[in-house]
Image (tube, rainbow, N blue to C red):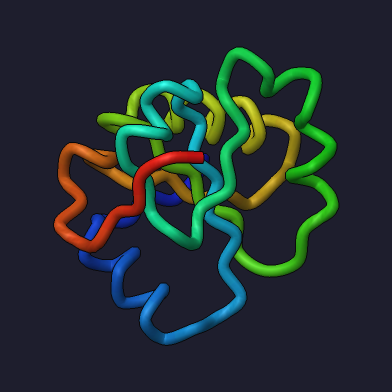
Length: 103
């Protein structure tokens, strides 16, 4: 099983400045419309080929997408492989914090 947090919990963790690896699994077009500044983009369509990038990080690994569905699937997949990961419930639709646009 994987853990889920709310967007307000995510905001608190980001503001606290802890070791947090936020990975956005939306597609590039969605990312460019607005994303969390601290996030890194690994689109779901590229995830199989780039999964090693997740294995090489330190700290908590948190996934986000538009609504929490795609990131939840990634979390499910990785948790079955023994990784401790977290999904952001509600995704970017529920995010009330700042966003940046563009690449």
